[in-house]
Structure formats: C-alpha cells, structure tokens
Image: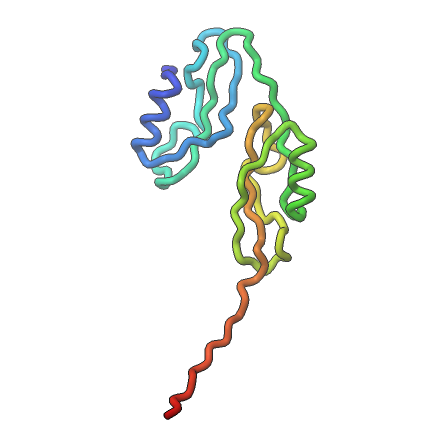
Length: 145
C-alpha cells in the first residue's frame, strides 16, 4: 500500500534511519503524485540505525522527471572532480576531508557512486584525501633550575 512521502519519512526517521537526498521519481498509473512507490533498500528487517534509505516517489500518470547518470569522480583530484560534476547535470556538496595515504585532494569515494541513475540536479557527496596524518615528535623539556 502506497503512503504519502511525509508519512514514510516520519516512519523511517523514527526508526533511526536517514533519508537519501537523491529521491527518484517515476510515473505510475495507479499511485498518486507524491506517494512512495518503493524504497531502496526495500522493506528490510534488520537495517543498522543510521542507514540511508532512498525513496522512489510517484509523479502520477505520465509526469516524468528528467534523469541523468552520475559521473565517476573517484580517483580524480578535487579540481577535476568538480569540473566533471559541473559538466554533468548533477551538483556537488561540501566534501569531507579525511587523513589518508592517498595524495591530498584525491577523491576517495562518492555518494551516489558513478553510473547511478539520478534525477537531474542530484547532489554528489565526496570524501577527499587530506593526505597522511603528520607525524609529530614529542620531547620533554628538561627541568632546569
């Protein structure tokens, strides 16, 4: 049974789950506009708290939302990744920087992954290498008096 978007969001959030910001839309001859057709992952028992769930919403009969393919930017440096996303029909959000052995500025991962079909204007989130954690040598100041 299809439920309104806000009802499903409330149910998921109350279970400790997060809503994937990249909502998919598809026409449906029976399910009205704004009702949830399905979720990804589907109705699953035992999801860990904090799991992101993607909603698939009905646009009603014949209303189609344009979609595009997410470019793969994993492994690119940040400037090339941003240029690639800018040249696609997607957007990018603030990135997370993490200490890593990869060169600083390399894209370590992205959400959604490259090749995923999303609505035009969907946001791509990136995790970027900040380079290795610097090694700090600590010394003791000798007692002088």
